[in-house]
Image 1 (tube, rainbow, N blue to C red):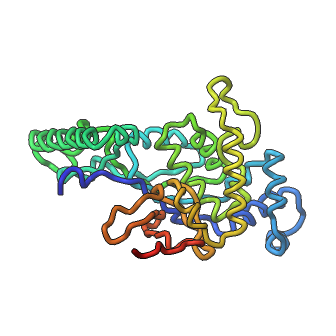
Image 2: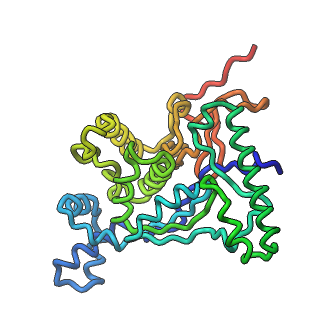
Image 3: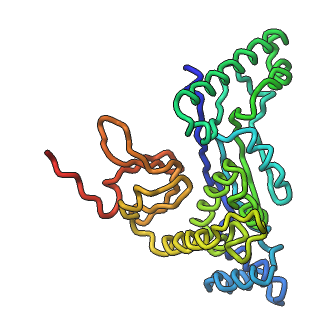
Length: 317
């Protein structure tokens, strides 16, 4: 494999979450003010939709009960730059991260190329890849100089590895911390990589518990932007996009082909009532066997124009 084969794309999977998250939170909140035994209270909670009650709780700022529910994500194809940022979120969050001490990169390491560099063109992408190849050569050299002794040499040879180096992690956050994370990291002023990750995570959470996350995100969703003169000024557009997202979740039939062609990475789309999250922008395939738009979802499935509502095959000839 050439070093170019190690360029990585982000992948985010929702692995686990607390069952019946909204009911669990409602049960915790109602228990605080009820004389009922837990099993009796549980039955009452399960017998009635709790959406309105959850919204009331969050409007009151009663957030401690949100900590009863957790979501666990598998994340790969992200840089060590992102790792340094996301691990600042320690309260209500747990991380298991691929080690550069116990995992050797002698056979190559994955890396992330920033979009701004990709936009400069192929020559600059190749220059970046060449620099990654140089670093791999230096890494191998230090491995040899340090005795090629497995983890013993890994732990010092890794000092030469770049911030672009890919890492993988298992991340668990409770809902209270997720909402705080989304407020900070979905803001347009957040760094692009962690903002894109937060957007994908939020979309996954919305498919499970929309009541808990409908207003989660940058502060401008809920009121005035706190950034002052540094504000992006796009609060109205951000609120409109969230309204459209919530409406789409209420009517998950099949995304229209015209909307499919405009899909951006991290956005929700629907096929036969099932929700998916775009892991790439919709783009022309470039495959000689298929001349049309294609988009990939978070599970790696490919979706073609013909999968979407309103598709009409092009006339032959």
